Image 1 (cartoon, rainbow over the protein chains, first blue to last red):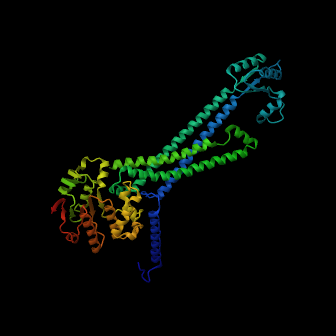
Image 2: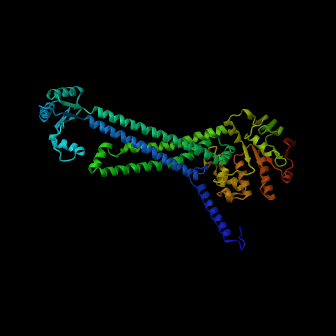
Image 3: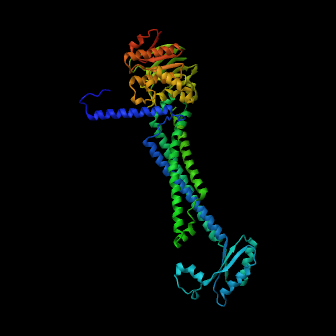
Length: 334
Length: 220
């Protein structure tokens, strides 16, 4: 094209830009013809709607993996609590007038030494009991003036129910004021709470998946409407519905993989960061308490594999839903 | 190859836009489909392509009654028909080469099995230099030739071309017509929808199907 003298710079500039764009297109086209193994992409890969969908999938994957990871953490913490609590037993000897609680405690410790399955039995000193009560009563309190029970902590190493019955019998004979607490009620409550949290997490996961499924279905319909001309041409050049549905599936799987990778990676970073922060906090007493309550923010290999699995499932789900929606639309349109 | 028997078409509850069409397109035949604008040439082509269903009558395509054809069979039949659309319908995000190769690609053929074939055809229609160009930068005539090449690449048994010379100058129109005649000689049945009398006069041995007021008149 010959530019006439006197034509405006703007016009000249736009002509130049068109030429540049044409040249870029030509180079792109040439590179595609001679590229080896690259497959023809029938549904345009980059669009605003596509980028928005990648963001939605990334957010959904992030939420899903965060929920899944949290469920794993809660389950692991619950197992730790249960295992720790089940390995211990506490015997409380209430102060009763006319009886020496501390003396009874020593006798109980003696009486339990020879029982099979008992690893250790130890009488808590007054100082240790005071330390336990310190958060509620403050420091420097004389426990002698308070009706504080004497504690014997028993560590169990696979004691049979028969042994536990013998243990309870021996304790009762030594001190009628002694109460054996095997933490069973506490463990059950913990397990119920952890179970409820895992169920809630699964429900959230289900809602996230449903929301994502709907978002993908809408996005697919939108993409189909936007690619109506492409679908029409494909039909006329002899493409089957299966082929067209597969093309859309491939397109959405690609978007799904991108979104799921971003979301999954973000969740992994969050868990790694939380693990690192809690390991730093556990150096002080408050951190110790948090760690005792929630366990370590350490997912472990299985947890990270689960995040990878959920992310892969999200991508796969994206492809499958889009294929189904496209196929149904094509059948409906006829 | 194609047989219409008392075919009628109406949109909704309106009057019939095509009435009592009865004709046949035989193997290795050449015909112009003509008539004034809005006479229904494109509609008739859409009926042949099975993108429209007739309201009444019988259409037989490759010895199959179109009213009883399953969806999967429609795909198989369309692969035997080449179409050149009036508005080209090239995909803008694909190169000229990819657009022309599209019918082979959707059949699942390996790219290396058709690369030489597509390149050769593009050279034949005069687009050898535009092989990697995208449609938005092609001229009207180049788009037209790319659309024709796309229809020809599968060596169709029947070629439907809707106003294939509508966007080109007379000399190019003549060249394109020669291209269709060559194809016809190689055994393809051709239907060219046009209202260009000059074009039809250049190949006056061809049959003329004239559409007017919804009815078809055949001049052998």
